[in-house]
Length: 221
Image (tube, rainbow, N blue to C red; front, side):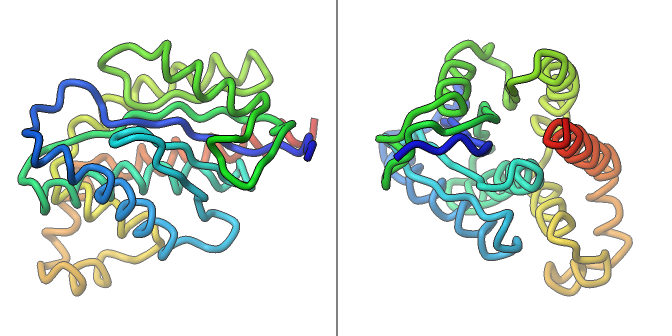
């Protein structure tokens, strides 16, 4: 089947440098799966991520709506951070490359699909530096260059999240206000505010808004 509509394809893996035992590593696929499920339960239909775990710590995902993909992707980072800490008492990260473009050869399984978005995502992941966590490639050179810069700042913010900040950030990205988050987490509203500020939630939202604006502009071009 050939399809030239644009999608967002994500190639991802456990970030290098994690010091986990064989027993802990065996739980990574379930943690990745749980992180995707947490995101998909909380986002509207157009923002859901279809995913497949390729190996123990590698995965592919696809969003049919590139405009909505970044919010879901940042939520995935947050979910994996706090879920892995709860399960393993370890501070673990994912790293991903998102390729935006057509999927010329779509199959039932993502691992059997191919096309521009898949190739950009997988090749981009392979070229990422060890300390990089997120990268975006698009058919437009100017957009790819801008995302390379903004993603370098996102790397710093994501890396510095504590598990508590990541959990608050995850809930914040679902649209819940600070009082709702405080009730869910069983902490005070000022405590939620401190966690969100420490996670730089305003900057995260600005990044997502900018991403969505640029993708919309690209689609109209």
